[in-house]
Image 1 (cartoon, protein in one colour):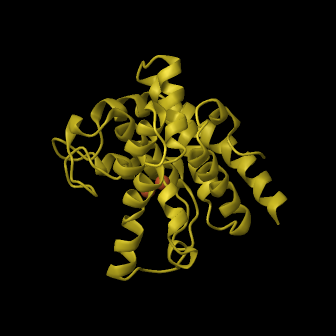
Image 2: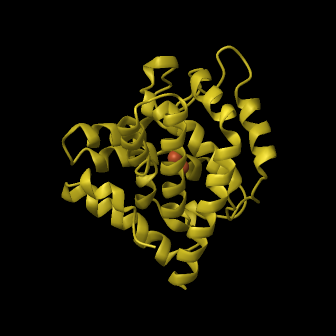
Image 3: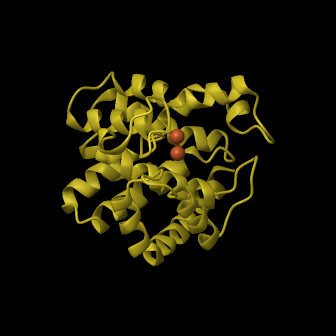
Length: 223
Ligand SMILES: [Fe+2]
Ligand SMILES: [Fe+2]
């Protein structure tokens, strides 16, 4: 499986192209890392959510491609920390949370509207609609739309995936957890994104299952 080819038209800059290939190489070197696989699935889910929200196809696709770069800051964090089994120390937790700033910095080397969107996504995808996220504790529509959409796609994929420190969850368990995060007024996610998510959850589940199959093929090839 080659790196996400649809990005070629948009990531013409050297820095974006290099980061894109670095994500791919990271998974080839460390199959348990699942950084390229996760990024690819989040990109697909984000495009689907954008379409379900009624965004024009071109805009949904652009946001999906920007979503591919959301965790690019993790390239600058030791794999031993990212894949540590068990609980993290406070310092390790802080280091991992710094992936938002590190990704924003890496993407700042590139100019243009697509790079700006990718930078927003990298820097702000862990913000919460209720203002209790990180790194800037932005809330509501102060968080750019692209980051609000990626936030839901990111948590869905992270919960459904196996990690060194946790088992994967079923689609149904994942939905329950997402709904818990939505408690309160406002909740943790943009209600319009969540509405689109719940309306299309059967399709989202199907896309995720099929993307896992192609990801599995890449992992087997990398062995
Ligand atoms: Fe992240
Ligand atoms: Fe992520």
